[in-house]
Image (tube, rainbow, N blue to C red; front, side, top):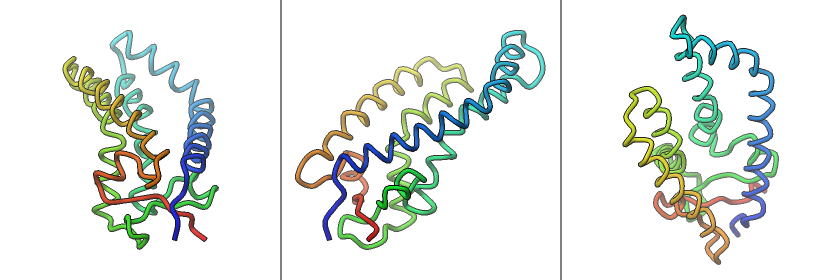
Length: 156
């Protein structure tokens, strides 16, 4: 069984980004009101912003439960173990945690106000981003795949 190439993975990421763009476009009025409330220090504005900021994490958690985001599903690819058998939930959770570590740290920095977390987030995000380009190699595995023993395969 051969692994999915970088192009299919990039295509899935683009589809996922477009879906999130539609979600945020629909929620834009809520976001605007919440931002205004947060700036004035009144109401639940800050917590609504945190919830809205968590949407990408919730959306991406499809990778934990099903091994594929809607974008991956649309393009017929799935996260599996390196050997091509279904990945364990532990592998999928570890992969998700590594891949989205930067975003998780950004939310934690926003909640706690710790600037150091924001600095670490930037570094983590850069490492994960650059690590995605490892999927261009012959193994077709990004950094987060190599760390967690996973790979992306076609479903058919």
